[in-house]
Amino acid sequence: MHVLLSGMAGFIGMHLAQALVARGHQVTGFDNLSSITYEASLKEDRLRALGFKDIPAYGQQVQAGALNFIKLDLCDKNALTDLVQAAPYDVVVNLAALAGVRLSTLKPDEYIHSNADGFFNLLEALRAVDESKRPRLIFASSSSVYGDSNKVPFAEDDDSIAPVSVYAATKRINEIIAATYALRFGLDATALRFFTVYGPWGRPDMAPFIFTRAMLAGQPIRLFNEGKLRRDFTYIDDIVTGLVKIVEGSGNRPRNPVQPYAVYNIGNGHPIELFDFVHELEMAAGVKAQLILEPMQPGDVHQTYADVRRLAQDYGFTPQTSLHDGIGKFFAWYRQYYGQK
Image (cartoon, rainbow, N blue to C red):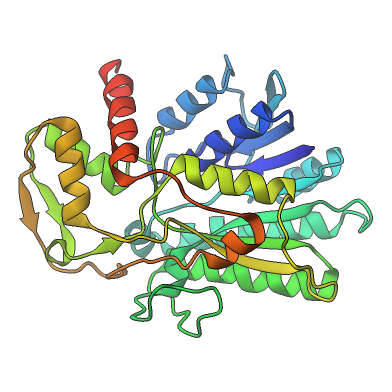
């Protein structure tokens, strides 16, 4: 298979590219290497870990075995359309987006431009492909679309879809417009609502990094909602295993010829309280955390809890990694990577 992958220099994108190539697929990836949410140097290091020796200039392409990388922005409509038209792809996986609930409140215009406008550009580029040759689309949504729901676990057909942040709203917009393109234009689209993903090469603006950095520096950790937040932490290897199954189409997803659209939760299905997460980090680091308990932050939610039965039924998705093992692997990578900086 030939897969077009946006956000290849991102956390999930890097791991998915590795897994697909290991299974004999060809991957053409692109990323704008933005530094809005965190430093671009980590994204560049991810590309180097994939085997790319050089980071190309904008619009240029480099190759590493079965991997190709182009520095490109989803919001560059003409260049994106040319890329989609350039080769016969079997699947397009869209992981490119500005992530982060709290930052989206400070920079709503940038989030809407990147996440909504950029995604629309991709849909239009796919619509322009002859229907007989049009690739399937798999795209990243988010558990944040459920908002601060009290109904748990979160199920795909819940009526309680009520985003409470700009980031969540952009992801819900993606879902709605993709479902409409599936209905009106026959675009085969699958939305994946990711729950809190962690592991090696992760995002430094997320809790595992923030907590680890503070602990090793002897600084306090801020726990919002007095530490009573619960998150459905999911290890990256489990996420990628599920993604590969969906990319390869190896499951039993029922297909509606009138509206070939599906949505899945992809998470662990076992929420963890932040206190317990910090405790696992303490054991991995051999350091006692200093805690500062703070009130709830605007745009945040009290809990995330994935109902993954649909993904299990259609694709055999069964997360295997315990929090203890996942934190151990993350911490070992963190020490190795940042110890070299």
